[in-house]
Image (cartoon, rainbow, N blue to C red):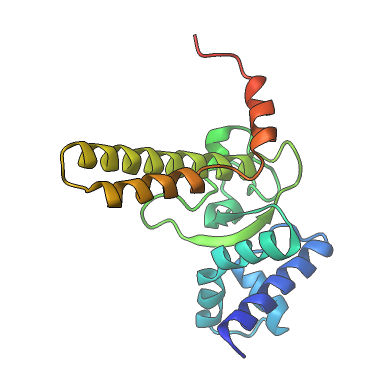
Length: 187
């Protein structure tokens, strides 16, 4: 079986789990479901964990599902509170704490968006905007400054800026502009 076929099979397993109303499986639960036994070595769980991001991509592109990646904290019960699986986060900060952000914080599972009040899914999108938007701005500024300083020739700068423009133009531009028109201008 090719890597691609294995990834597709894992994504199909997760999609089936979603259909069984298991909307937030951990990598371990995915492995057990996929292989049909809970007697698996740690390397199997690790292998599924390493593929979670790619599984999410397949779930979005192939099945049209809105999913995000969660870390171990999402599943962890503490003395002060049940896990976020059983009691969703009450604040945006709690939601962000369920995402695999920061040094050493690992991917642990997949979470299906559960509706308009899903703070974790919204936090994942917000984090994508924050990191992607900052990288885009930084590199556009660097390209323009490099061009103006004579460090990047025009024949390199123009395609770089054009590529950035094309990649940053959303597919749903009209819908984005409609939503943006609802926002109040900053004071």
